Length: 189
Image 1 (cartoon, rainbow, N blue to C red):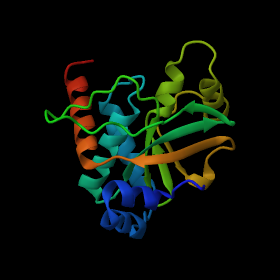
Image 2 (cartoon, one colour):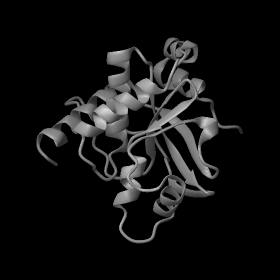
Image 3 (cartoon, rainbow, N blue to C red):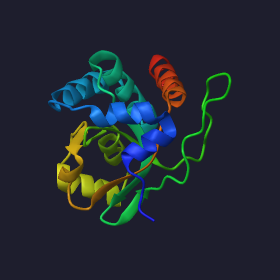
Image 4 (cartoon, rainbow, N blue to C red):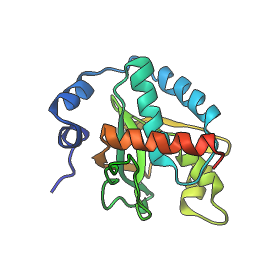
């Protein structure tokens, strides 16, 4: 059975109207992605495994400030055929208190908009790995060191790098993750 399209995932997770809005949007230039990525990364300290929080903040920032309907996607990341992050389930819905509690979610999150993938955590994650790592070696050999944001057309990703969407996050998940990120930044965690 073929994997669902991003539009199908949006329809299931966020509704048909949101899927149509996403599908009809045209990103005139990726410049807004780059500028917003720089803005956010200058304010968010590096943190290992923060892909869901950072992607949620970025999507909300793009939506709120530029009317760009970016979607937060949860899924797998494969590098040269090897699964680096395997998403077996979606992030949980927040509790009534607004918290998301999950100690064993192993997927990866990124944003998508109009055929573009944006990933603010992949370089930070790779560079923080101590010792040998398939991810770290791939990132260093294909991008070098000192990179901040991966912004790429899906078809322009390096050979062997594959983002596999499985779920899209809902607003309540995004809001809770943003709250968690804000708490971490404010408290220096």
